[in-house]
Image 1: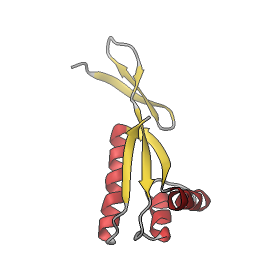
Image 2 (image 1 turned 90 degrees about the horizontal axis):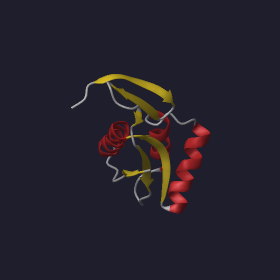
Image 3 (image 1 turned 60 degrees about the vertical axis):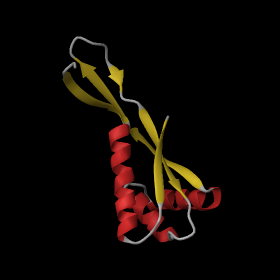
Length: 108
């Protein structure tokens, strides 16, 4: 397995990886999708978008309404590990408050 010389953040949400003796490549990105349900409150969804995904209130509210009216919304695009971590944070927060809220990832 090649050793990684360095990891350089070149653009937001895209991490450039340099490998010793190999070409520079990019980690694949994944969409984070939030799904609507009949139990989770709108306030909870906005709070998660602000605290976990660092969205401003106006953007969080817009995304929450898209989730509510469309059934789901693409809320962020991240490398796999970061996307998985954010989804786990969402699910943990939902469990703590007793909500069945679902958040998934899919390849870009």
